[in-house]
Amino acid sequence: MKKYREKYRKENTVKFNNHKKMYRITAPSMLKVGLPISGFFGFLEMLFILSQRYDWKYVEQYEFLRQAVFSSIILVGVLVNGILACYGYLWKIEYDDSDVLYRSACGIVKKFKIQDISRYTEKRKKQYKFYCGKRKLFQYDIDASGDVYDLLHILESKNLYAEELIPSRKEHCVVEPMLIHKMLPLTGGIILSIFLMILMKSGDGKLWMYLVLGPCMIALLYYTGDYIYDKTEIKDKIVRKEFLRKDRIVEFSQIIGVQQYKSKNEKEYILIKINGEKPLKIRKYNENVDVLLTRLKEEKRRRRK
Image 1 (tube, one colour):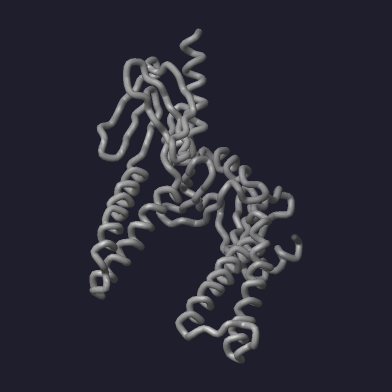
Image 2: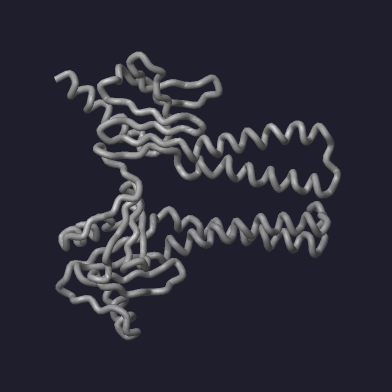
């Protein structure tokens, strides 16, 4: 650590006082696995190129287009795992109660003062972004290794508290699908749209193709809207929003039970039974479902008292 500080002192970066307690945040150690995996993909890429270039006896030879496709796929593996490895080995945040030393995955080191941080945001108590005015300084996720909470405590001691982007407290939370669940049908719809445009422009499309792809396109658009507009907000009451449906407002006093439900196509839901009305059906693996269930249990105990 001493050598590390001396190195960046010479480069006129940050100077920490020795009497101050130092904190460190590093990337999850599992990201370092990206280095051997990236090396493995690089080795495969070299073997593939050599096998095609010198016409190896026991390796199938492909035309140029297929060579380019296979080579690109392997290179993507090299690139993705190489980036993960850079985060695993290089990304780091070191700080005390007055200075922050931030090193990016590219190895670029930046110095900030704690007093430079004018605000910071919190997303589901998992991701924190720190700003100086509107300029983002740095960010990190709670699944990083090291002293991930101490910086928050230092800022709170200076009366600077996180701004919640997506509420995730029992008193106020938003239950909605994860981003990946929203993106999948949208991505499928975009790919299908491109494919349909290619068919229409080339004139090679058959009637049966359009009869199959048309309904698939409509289904993907529907599910895209269904996932994007799916939102349940919990405060002093429950407000349920769904695609192409009227918003529902439910008082906690109307709830008579909660149970898990699995549909015929194996999708799992949380059913909130409402007295005299149709139950609320919420996807089991939505964000903040655990917070919602905890709140429902507390409300049930409160009513019993």
